[in-house]
Amino acid sequence: MKERIKELYEQAHIERQQEYFSSVVDPTIKSVSVTRHFDLDLFAELIVRECASAVNSRDDSDTGFWANIIKEHFGVKE
Image 1 (cartoon, rainbow, N blue to C red):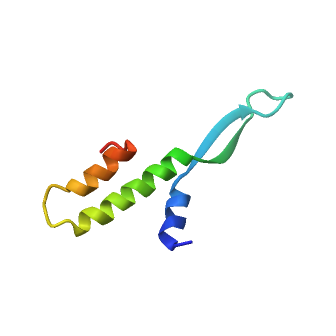
Image 2 (tube, rainbow, N blue to C red):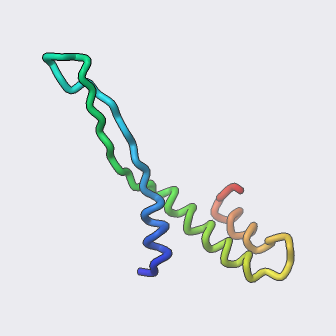
């Protein structure tokens, strides 16, 4: 797999922190749980944005016409 795809894959992980009371004896003691969640929609959006950016960098016009076509096709907003 290309290195850039791996980078986008890592970016598509979202960390979630959750605090909870962890002691029955002392209810004021809190613990924090951190989990990583892979967001497939975000991964797809990052790939589409990367493709649009690549096309835009090769587009001679200032409008980014083809990049906008790609993003619109996949429903990626600015």
